[in-house]
Length: 314
Length: 314
Image 1 (spheres, each protein chain N blue to C red):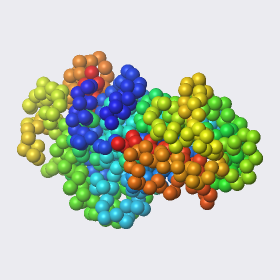
Image 2 (spheres, one colour):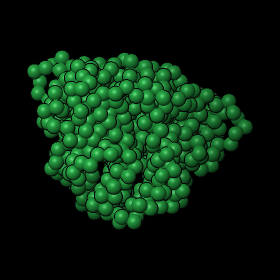
Image 3 (tube, rainbow over the protein chains, first blue to last red):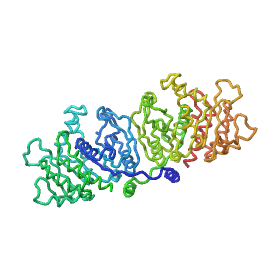
Image 4 (cartoon, rainbow over the protein chains, first blue to last red):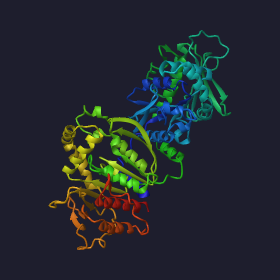
């Protein structure tokens, strides 16, 4: 029935809607996706940027999942076909009626209308899981903290905000591990940027030093030129390094140490920001916020993403 | 960003999904849409036919609607853009995650996955409301009982099944009348078939006689040829008549009186069914069921729709 397709297309409203810039922030549970997203939405402003979480595409509620032979990290536990459909719709400028998973009660509740703004940030376990879902994004990031760091974050969050006991979280982490390996971590290979927050090995920084960050920038998209701002020898707290990614492909890595002084990070922030060709604009000052504290590595990671969002919108 | 559209299309799964035959059954609240739909789904079998109700696209729950200056019959009270989107997806063979409005509690609840079967029947207040929604259907019907009949049906159903008092239903009917006129009844002009169940004026049939039916068949689709089975003078209980529809356009009307004997209606059923060119197939015997009673006019109306569904599938 190609006639019906044609009829539908001819009956559709013209002109076609404006297409948003789409950013994927993928990563395992409690990898820091929401923290990263929040700073970006705040920097762009909620009128220009909407965010959504792919956890909402869970096909089963918490009670139902107890009876299943897999966890929420398994594709079969999620409406991934619908997630892909909604990503395509958003990427081409259409609204979606997004399902809602309530992490507090563990229930699937009333869906909500999401209209694409200038920027759409999609964070979650599965945004990069298929070729089709990846085709919806302009920029893709995978958050990749070391497992022991992520476990600590997950225990802290799930006991504080989601009503689990520490034992339950530990048991769940163990149950999820094979599925993390099979379905979540492979998405790292498909990200334009892989961001890893971790302490620097071998250093004995005071305990309140922010985590350092390593940003692996794959040449799948054009990154800002930081070679001038980060000439060798100029800085010990930040540096660029040519490396191979875990698959042996060449990448450039930006290392930002947690103890980096504000002046140094400002110089790099300026280099990133002026690469956009709008040197007069101030870099947003809500970046790097971590509760009441501030993290220069987080600020730089967020600014790098902001650079790519702004660049893709042009 | 046409490149992204192309990337999405190229990443999509091939071959394209099979497209279902889509039937719209539009009409005001309690016009008999569910009764009509139920018989068709049963006749085709739930493995070949799914049905959905556009009431599920209510944008507000019952509590929220109390504060609004319009009723559920107003376009602004419904996610009609999403309804259109879902109709397009279903019409082109894709599943949708359909919202769910619970008529019992008046709440919007967890959405459900609807995968298009061979046939998709969409009943509700708004399936024919826009050019785009109409383009999604192969066959369209409007149920058009006289207002006093519909009021009786609505009072009966809403007090028995939806927990309203009779006074509430009457007040609601009055409140809805201007919106029925503005938004629901105009859809009648866009239906291939307009079906009206009503008593025959001037006759004094016993009170348990089924309602008669008038089926206005617009030449917008090809109807089965009934001229031979319904030669003038052959039957008083069923006849064809050339008429003008309320807009002055020519239509053929099939009148089936409530008291029609089973033998006569069987002859017409056979004429409809053999027009499909499969004379050996029995007509489904679940048609015409009205609770525990049987209505020949309903059976013929349902068979006519079944004819069109089967015809469109070829």
